[in-house]
Length: 156
Image (cartoon, rainbow, N blue to C red; front, side):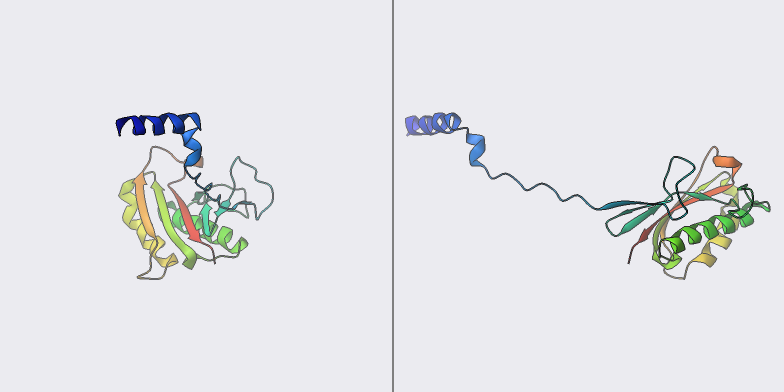
């Protein structure tokens, strides 16, 4: 019996035993689309990237798209409002709306402004179906912004 097992092992090795096992099918790769609804990007990132039925939006800050591109004045409330308007604008340009947002990450220069940011943030979503969300304080944001928000949306 022992000799038979040894013989089978030697035969399997000689035949390249690894070829006897089924080869798993390669994992499917999701379709990826880099979306540039406003033309070629000026900075090295895409405004949105669609992977399957999820759309990952680049973080938005409260810049005025129709003026100089500077961060709006008026403090955290004005910046949060403009940040979410910019998010809305990107979503609309790719055929989606704020009700398709499923996850947000909020970056804040000062977590003491969290309540004021939330007062504006909540007006952009329909209670009780708010997106899942994380919020964290950071050491600095682009253009000295007070808030940056990035979102993930579900495509239709």
